[in-house]
Image (cartoon, rainbow, N blue to C red; front, side):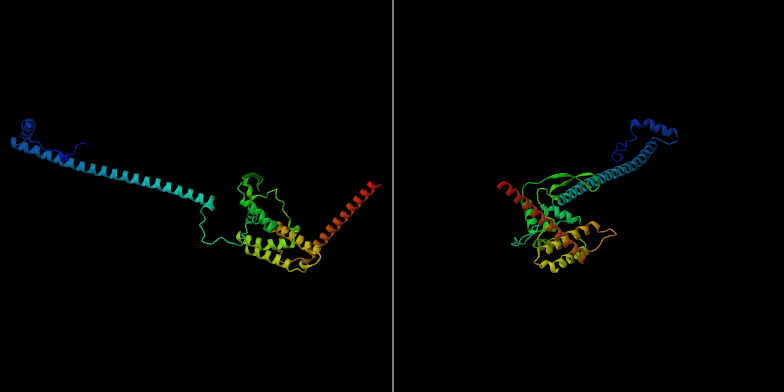
Length: 307
């Protein structure tokens, strides 16, 4: 319905233009012309009232549809806005995760005067994975080397390395061992360097959330070594034997941990310590013999030249 019946004006049915209609009604039994005009008014009024009802229903339907469309548009707008906010929230979370240093709260503490222990990224990643890590990285020398790398403005970038599944993967070069840096093996450390590194690596294990029993085992292991009578021996070969034993047993523990053949290194095995001493003594003897032979050879060559 296009026209509003409420705006319609009832015609004057007594006018000449409605004469045929009035005559038609009188032929159907209406008594006179006036009654016929009244009948036409009644019919028009009934039709108009019906049209008004239809119009009201139509208006109500259109209002309802308009309201539903508006609600749908508002809901869609809210959904789009929420999706945008979720996307921004996700992007912010990724930004925080990717660039943690950027969003670290500023501490109110003053600049410390005591040295800050910052091991290399390679050592941190090793401990984070629970893998074997050389004590060198926690000695004064190793920490100084790490400090130089940290303070360097040149990023090493990404390098391609084989993963655990055999597939090639890109990794941060700072998290790998720098082949240009000479690493001192555990057995070749000095006793002072062992003492420097042991406590520091224990703290690093705690920071990387190693299981408490693993940490306590290493504490007991190094304390037992530091309390062994050979650590104060005048013969340096005995201290070297303890260092060799430490290196061998800690590495073997990492290789066998979790297997049916695993063990604890907390308690020292004196038989293996004696074997380590024998190995050190043999190495020292072989080196001494090689040095003697070299000196004898040089002496012989010098004598030949004099002749």
